[in-house]
Image (cartoon, rainbow, N blue to C red; front, side):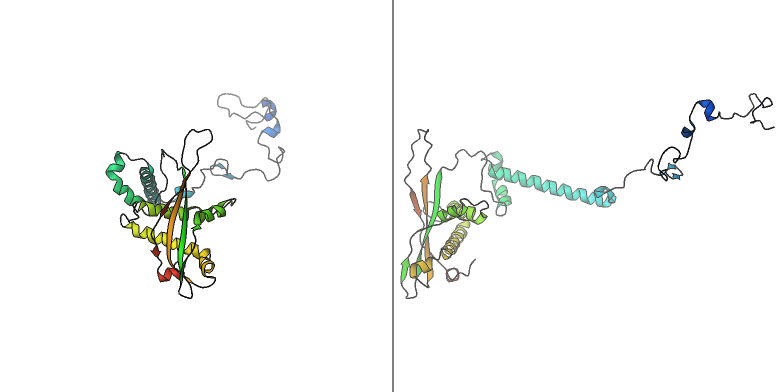
Length: 283
């Protein structure tokens, strides 16, 4: 008789093999004792396949690497070096720009030339930090021209207020162009910064600012059809003269400040227009 048979002849003792108790004797339901998934109410085919280390997908070893982490060590070092160089460049650019627009200080006095060499001409800034006195003047740029007609006679046009033209183009325009907003103003600021009160150039950039401003004047006169307006037909621009009209902004009503609202003018000498510019060859 087998030792696992039940009955009075079954072996008992310490050497007898231990037989697991049936589910009924342990008080457990049959479906909780390893019944197939279909018998436990799970949909057919939902049981996970079993691998050498347990059910497949139950304990994933890790997600696959993506991005920089997926690169080899050599390429990760190269990426880190590139990012470090870019970060250093950005920090230097921000530092130089800050020193350029900041008020005069010990660093700019000692290293002002190095800062200017870094900023000009690609990163030129037109603003200042901690401006003590905001702009309180209206400055308009005007131009007139000497035009030679088909009969050889030269006539002088009236003054064209180019700043007023830009103002009308910008007014009620949701997307004004950079040219309308800044070209004329920056050209005049460039000229003033490179010339003294007698309109004499200071430094090597003086002649460059004159050429730049003169070309803008010729292009704007051509856009306004100044030649046809002066001669009634064909003609050529021989020379141009530029002036600025400056007037103080009136103080608010509650202020006791008294300022003159009478405009002042600064007239530049007549500039001869080269033939290629007069013919529209420079754009």
